[in-house]
Amino acid sequence: MGGFRPGVEVSLEGPLRFLALTLCVTFGVFFLRLFQLQVLEGEALRVRSERNFVRSMRVDAPRGDILERDGEVLATTRPAFGVAVIPSELREPERTWTVLGTLLADDPEKLAERVGAPRGRSRYQPVHLATDLQFEELARVETHRYALPGVVTDVKARRDYIEGPLAAHVLGTLGQISEAELETRAFAGYRSGAIVGKSGVEALLESTLAGREGGRNVVVDVAGREMELLAEVRPVRGGTVVLSLDIDLQRAALAALQEPGPEAVPAGSVVALDVKTGDILAMVSHPSYDPNDFAAGIDPETWAGLRDDEWKPLQNRAVSGQYPPGSTYKPIVAAAALEDRVIGRKERVFCPGQFRLGRRVYRCWKRQGHGWVDVHDALKHSCDVFFYTVGLRLGVDRIARYAETFGLGRPTGAPLDERAGLVPTADWKKRRFGEPWVEGETVSAAIGQGFNLVTPLQLAVVYAALANGGRILEPRLVRSRFDSQGTLVEQPGEVVRSQLELSAPVLRAVQGGLEGVVMEPGGTGGRARVPGWRIAGKTGTAQVVSLKHTEGRGDDIPVRYRDHAWFAAIAPVDDPEIALVVLVEHGGGGGAVAAPIAGKVLSAWFDGRVPAERVAGAGGSRAVD
Image (cartoon, rainbow, N blue to C red; front, side, top):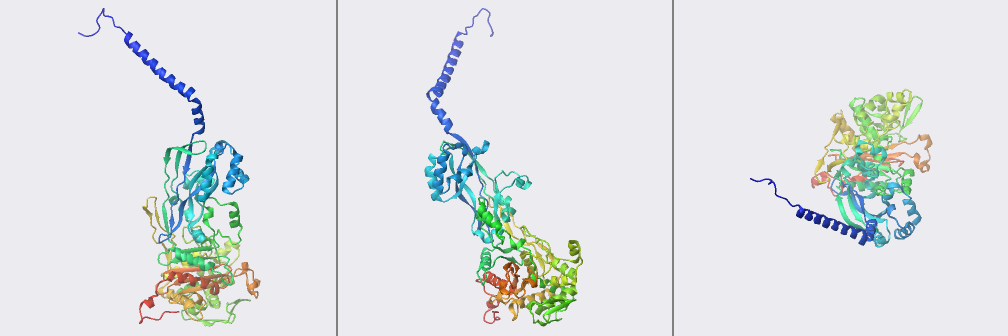
């Protein structure tokens, strides 16, 4: 049997000696290591601990690219080298400002002012003194950085707008997120100081383009040099957006609007739509600005110049400029009169050059008059008296009803910051001014004057509907979106907002009159012709002030008081593809100023293509020149 046996002694002396020896050796090792760290290496480790520390850095995510319809890059992200100082790490500030001033060709006092005297946690945050250095400048700083404690260089993702001002109003701007934005759901998860889209596509598709920032924890020495990477989270690039813009047409439109003539165009807009899909092919607003100025924070001088410019370069005139449409409105009145049988297609009205209503006389733009004109001739010659007569027969409310069916008086649905324009009615005037509508105001409304207001984009939608059989299309700016992996996220289709209740004969009659404007002798829009192509269009001249302020003054009229010049076009007539609208603020006559600009843009659209009648060969019909 096992177990305890009485009378047998058990000795513990061996195990206890072993345990005591083990403890002595262990504590001896601890003591020797402590002696080494505290006495032998104490000073070196103290210096090392003071000089090496961990720095946490955010790594910005590159914003996604914005492309035009054929894949040409409009906006991308490139590396930008910068110089910053970390106030808590500065050892000799005065010397640092002097050296950096020399290296960066900047005033040392201004550098010191930019850094200031931050306190608390701000002392540990980098303050950028330069954000987009040339490689040579970066090399100079790097060469001396070992002797400048607290000075760091970095590389950040910077937005780069390849074409500068070309599509600035469409692409938009970037800026630092505001406190109000931080509190909204749309910016949940964003940090203070983040750069976000502020306008245009940059703001519209912020969630697609923004990406996700990363970060790095690194050990740095006293000179700010990175010694060891401890941890890293890589940033995720933003997704890609493909727009409907045709960049070649956009270039042609801007060049035509900016081309010096007898007098430079102070301001204006060009809009082109695909009449079958609603794609925005071109959208130009002049004067423009360079969105690159906003990419890393706009400087006060540049901002003041843009803000105080009397021609408002930051305004997108295509969607937020509201103007009387002038005679470009007449096709709507003509369509209303024909559809409601207020006048027949062959019925004529006599134009003696003026129209009397009560005690007031309303003039036609042609003082000697146009004689007897029908709808076709009235559109072709832009006869005011004809439309005064027809407008009174219709009445303002019926004109307004047709204008609204064309989409006027409300935003088009384009994904931009649009204004609604104005379609006046008798009830509207009563609400707005507390006064009844009078017939004289109908006379003005019938030729696109008075209270009428439209944007260039709205007018382009109207003419696209005249070309495509009456479909009111929602303008499409974004053709597709892709995520950061290149996977298709969205590909919007065309959107038909409504269908005009106009018969085919009425549409053909209006289109025929518009073709006469450009293609027939005596038409007011002959300067928009493109050899070989059949084009329809309408000139417009919209008064800015009453005639009594400008009559007889000619070129002495101050620019601000001169008429706006319009031209709206459809091309080609036999198979319409494009609706084009040109506006020149204070440009004068639409036929003389806006029509030639439209001709240049349409020439670019048809460049390199052969008209259908020429394709037919020698036996085909002769091209119209």
